Image 1: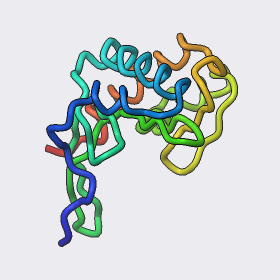
Image 2 (image 1 turned 60 degrees about the vertical axis):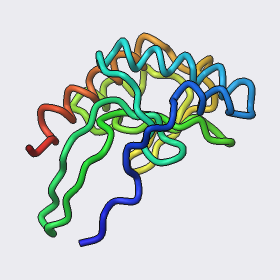
Image 3 (image 1 turned 120 degrees about the vertical axis):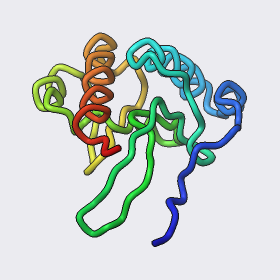
Length: 140
């Protein structure tokens, strides 16, 4: 079975965020870093070259594929901020209508800037997503 491409690295999260070209993404990335630290109680780790992750969990699919991933995280991409692990928890459907301006895909939440969303709702989504992943999805 192939190993996951996205693995934790020793790259400094602060150096990565300081190098983000877009000034709003850089500012929002630093705010998200602190928000996710507080919400998860975890220190940030770079997963691959562009994902800032908090905590890790082990997953195992019925196909036999298994691996490790960040429990929650984000990436300050050129087009928007991508947040991971926030839309799967049991509170997501209740919280998303209160969040503000966003888009979703199968596993990601996309926001243009933090000013577009309610930060208290986002913090609750981070806590809920992290808790759900670590208690319900994690397979030791």
